Length: 187
Picture (tube, rainbow, N blue to C red):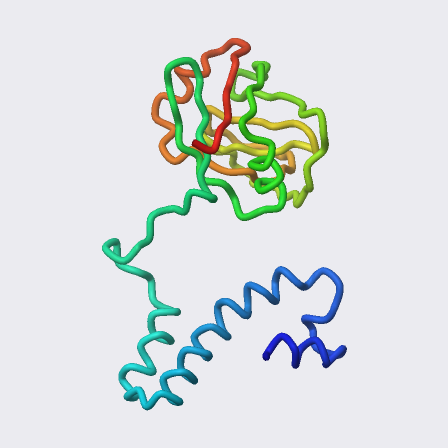
């Protein structure tokens, strides 16, 4: 219903080009708890029950309540006998990269801190300048070059985030300082 109201109001900020993703995110964060409050009120829920979803929406979940990372936000990187879990970024580029999997790349050594490989097709970009690159960052340089970093260092370059190795312990040793074959998969 809220979307129908917004669609009818062309002056609403969510009707502007390029704002759809931001508005969907806002609706999930704000409108879902409002809908829960309305449901509680209509069903005769108590005031204590009605305020719980709003408080929970702004609260940081405890470790017991933290959900496991969803399978669609995770992928795997295998280098030789080592397997590393990667949490995908919430970007169009990461989703497009995941849609290409499984994918095996012969990655080239570069600068003693990264492996890179140009993809046959361009991915969407949403560049930013991280300043500091971290061991385990999986980034896109330009629109076609996938880069996995195995050392932390400062960089003036701009990238699009694809994801991050959950635990980069041993990543530098697994990748080594030579060209290497890396397999990316969803399972």
